[in-house]
Length: 147
Image (cartoon, rainbow, N blue to C red; front, side):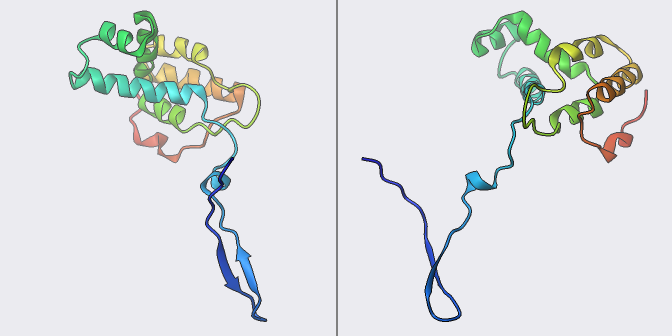
């Protein structure tokens, strides 16, 4: 037997009739779509970095053991931290994916991570964004110095 619990609110209409007012549940208010995988991986890289900096984990080998992945995979994730801060921010706030594949994937970003110059990274990022056409417009991009 299944029991369903739902909050019901009764209101009176103008003529005195009782009327059920249905409040939208939390699941109905969630926008459709899913967070892109690269956004989740970028957030994971930031969290891994925090764990390493605070000394909660000793090194990437221990981090890999705890995450049950290989040490080279941890290195791939942590390499996302080499991106310019504004690119990292844009990755975290990519629009939700409503259908199909993610427009930007990690493999496309590995070439950007290998670049030392943030200026070069930004040029490559702009090319990638133009190619995919999927990113949010961020007015805060200009708050970081162009190196």
